[in-house]
Length: 69
Image (tube, rainbow, N blue to C red; front, side, top):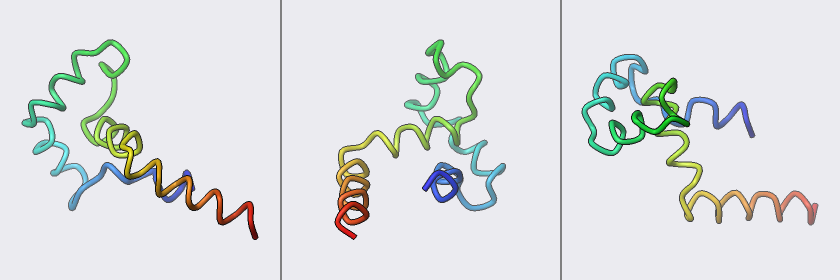
């Protein structure tokens, strides 16, 4: 699962999309947080994605399916 999620925050043309992400107010706010100061915009976006309720519910379903198998 880690390998699949590694690039979740990357957009099309990865490094070019990072420049676009930097323009987002939410990303800029996270870049000021000491926990994220050394993180790229794509890494911040990955963090935001995997911490959504939708993602966590989906991932819990995957885990539940694996346990039942």
